[in-house]
Image (cartoon, rainbow, N blue to C red; front, side, top):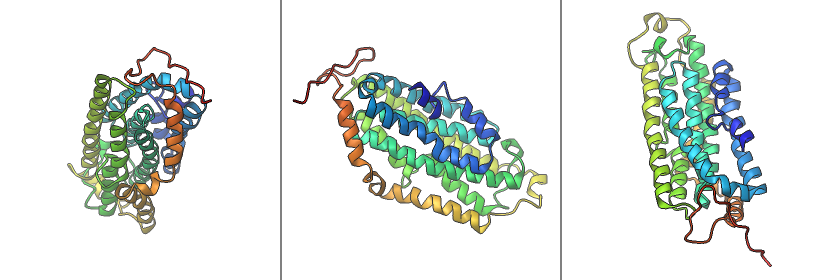
Length: 305
């Protein structure tokens, strides 16, 4: 669990990610946000849940708590970031919190939502970091206070950045909305926890959902609106998106919107696996009517024969 917590990452083992994003180039950003981070979540599903289901059922409440901490802490920290790359990096950490809550839900819906969140954020994170790289190539700065008023000079970049930011804040009709909604429904309908615990987790996670559009829309305002930086706006490198850049973002937005409108296209690919994993883990839950209490070891299941 600790090893995969570093990879996902989970607070407080997350500090390497903003530093890595702060120094990397755009292609590395896309690989890191789109694929490599998800290896931590995949390992939690395949290794912890499949190979160690009893241990997973014991530590699941901790995962739910850490998921909420991830969501709120990273969202609040993102507010304070002046560097565009670090702001998006903390946004990635916040979104991974929903993966943890889904993995801890003990429901098919919640676990399916966690897997969909990994797929969804892989596409959204890659698109955002690609646009960060495209913006840096034109403005030659990552400091938000040094930007401003570039929307008129780069309308295509502005439109693409807005679309991908709306996807990241879980706008209905996009994949992030479906994934987070499934996580909420899965955890709310779980019979593994007492109602007060579920209510606290859901309310705090909802606070994170509210914080996300605040810092993302504020980021868009600082880059494309606001007072114009005359030196920046008049710079000869400040040109609009090229056709290849529009094509790359379109290739990422099509599955984001397609999954948001018809999630069964994706979830049907792994529904059977999710059901099998969840059934295996649920064997170690306490009897009906006795919600899982942190610190009480789960009982050993009765033999099948």
